[in-house]
Figure (cartoon, one colour):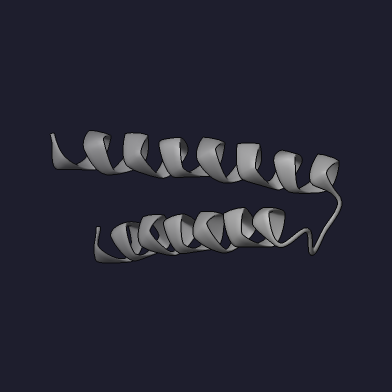
Length: 55
């Protein structure tokens, strides 16, 4: 459980860095958008797993 929560936090940190990269135009927008969507999906998957394990 602990490692899943750490992974979810790391995913949130990555999303913050992706938003900054988008803001400062450090990467192509299309590619960043794809990474952002993927990070949201992964975060939801982790949360779902955490929820199922705590039941």
